[in-house]
Length: 298
Image 1 (tube, helix red, strand yellow):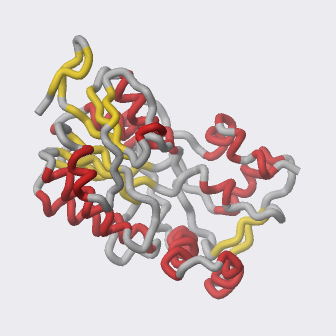
Image 2 (cartoon, helix red, strand yellow):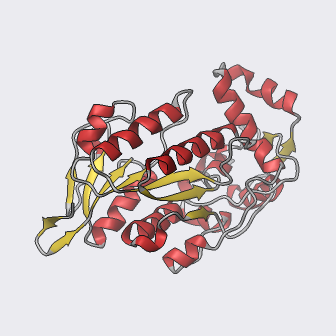
Image 3 (cartoon, one colour):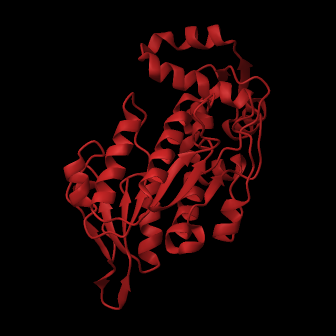
């Protein structure tokens, strides 16, 4: 199904979802720089980047199978960025996958989560396992990119009082940068059959406790940042003011629980192997992303 996209560039067409976001947008730029032919998929084409060799698909959302099928028309490969967390996320993913397969997509590269399993402590990781299973069941070629927690999440955990609170105990997390995920994904998408049926763990270069993360954040913020290990009851009580639905509250709290059980502590060499450079640790990330911790300054 490969077509000529721009003069001198011929090859398989890659449909990139989430191309207006941090991961999908960087993946699209990396692929465009490599001369790939792209279809950029999003709910609002006006927000999609202007890139050489890229066509903006008609607007589509994952839960609209007809629109997704049109958006994927002519694509050989789909880069599927997981949808925002919701009570219906698995259904949305299934809709998007089925639409892509119906459109003739032969390969899906899916952004999943570290240690996805039907009984994962982190409830949102269960969504990813069910999505993976559905993709496997379609029979199309596939690769799963199981990301750890985002490095960007760590400074956002700090409260106004300078404290990270959560039931993470003394567990460790191998948090990873968005750009490292994107660069690893681009390498997989530009590769061939050698990535088929593979599951890559995309992690940072080290697994740290939230207390250690607080120490790093202290150095950058210029004021003390601490960590308080909550009990489960305390965690739910301290977040009750947000009036979040039960599924969302469970996701928030269980993300810390999964750190406590070390389900987010896996450290993989997949990113340096695929990209040829080391993955960023927290200090490196904060150095290159000062906006992520600007709110922590005294």
